[in-house]
Image (cartoon, rainbow, N blue to C red; front, side):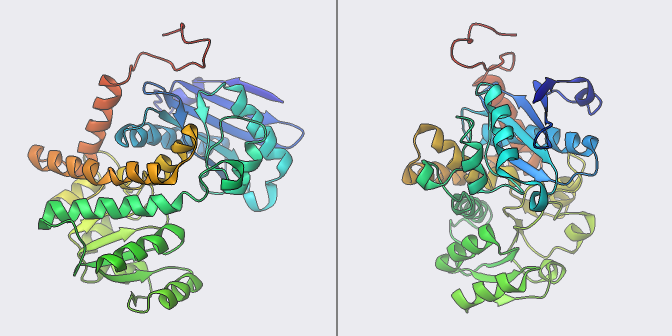
Length: 373
């Protein structure tokens, strides 16, 4: 069982990360990378992605990007937590085992709490229960094991709060009543989000690559409309478009075809081209209000972070309600400064990390807090 830290490879990607740990357990075949981007606000929290990357370089690029995003997500969510992420290289359908997950848990434990893990693509509540048998620093566990259970519940609730903020900003009302909302992807989060929208009086149009998911949702909410695919949904007459499936939902062609006033959804990494001159600028030029994904989908990380204090659902839900105010603040600043909301959100997150936290600090476990950079 070996672990080594390296920033040399990370530097090739222009990384400003605090720590990158490469983890290899020969017995189980575990190959993982844990990236800690920042602990200026506290220990780094972020999920573990189990994915069959084509190369170690691809895995490294992904974990660096994702961990940096978690720093911004956690800062903007008002959490006293930094940003981190982990990737396990392999196919979760064939490579995942109790022994491998427990080996991974021992690596997480070896970092002494600087990194706190949770679920992500390819990992689930049951996996965190296994990881948690080896480390104190696993969240997103089952309720029977003292965890918060399925984080999609408050993820969906947070996206709904973001939509309400967009409605307040654009139309002067905190409701989606009478508005047409298109939901692309009605798995866990999209399904729960649809329920909030229907209850609020919205007209909901949905699509999903999985016909069974659509069929189940239609049986629950017969008033919703179903279209064949995301391309059709994008071109539909919508007030709000909610991408809730995979990342990369907003490329140049999609934005050009989009027939909605607002984009607000649960999917991660929605902008194909990031940065001030990328897809966000195209949305701004078209007059489409974009609710930054890492802001409105932060309900899940707020939910799992509450585990660190002994999970209490109503307390976590109350904190997720704050996504309304946070989204409104981003939209107002963006309008005042003529910026894309994506850029305004980055600025607010950076300000909090710089003023509330200490960018020069490296968070250390209890007993080691005297050491600083």
